[in-house]
Length: 503
Image (cartoon, rainbow, N blue to C red):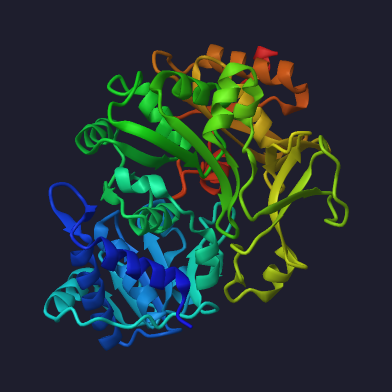
């Protein structure tokens, strides 16, 4: 039987025909036009050797609507798709293009020659345009591998996460509200935004793609397309809060989903209070899709009388089970205890591509160990403490980076903070902090020392960063997370501002 994820999507394009579907500025394709283009692209890809079970890699320099069309065409053919949007996500690109074993690499940016046939995106589009839109039957099957999506590789080479078409169907959320709004896509279409666009289209809504995120451009698009829903990374929320054109609200914006990295509760409260839109958080990972959600109602309760909820990632999403276990993964811990977060759902990956040993380590008896440390309160809300591996060992004591970052960000002069460890002859490792100054504040020794004093008061003296680096912005992965791999390299090779005098 054909994969339901694909047949339902194709059915939506047939059903909504003349309605506007995908735009990127003035040009807007209708659902019928998109489906015709998908059939043309599928025919051109098939002619180039792409078929059910074969690998297709699509590497592009930025967000563009063609990324969505190639994805749908690959799904119709039942191909195994790997997509990469350039920039930080191009780290490890040569390894990725070897590891995913593509039968064809489609690209609009320079890519290394790994032996696989290559075809420019412009040439693919030209070949497709010369074809008649002959319908191509859906060849994908439920248990076929639909995507191999690579993690951002902040601590090493990227890992390929393999997901079936059945898993993609389990990840899809029905969005009846989509028909009356425009989804404004500003994050990488190779990641969650691509799936979110397809969910919106499946419900008959229109999608608008911005090639890059810029606060004034984002605000202008919201005014032009209202009412708008969108997905933002926390760093984007901060930029909107800090820009004079968007700090107090964004006319036309109706709903914001956010996630991909931890959010500062104080800054989130600013945005929720000022903007007057509906807020929803999703906590998830490439290997498991969405694990938990903080609903719009939760955000309202947080403003009213439970401010601690803004530090939570919500309760398990529909169809998802969550447990917090001990270090061995054998015992489920009671509410309030900190341990590793485990999850189980039909949306989970099949495993890591070409890595059976690593797959066996994280997938056990149908459960996935996330690598995140967290706790669940009595009401079932999940709070993340840190990554299991994101720990600095200072004189034998574990320093989890996330609480240190939260304490640093609590200082008014600090807009964002990221913490990593580096070698120390004295303590084995030491804590280093990278700080971004808040608008209206200048970097300097005094605000650095005061921010580090907050760490000592809030946590303990051994959590205190020994060195601070001020940056205009934190380097981010394609998923909006601080690039800890790069920050560790910087910390190991730079001399920052010592902070011991602030004690």
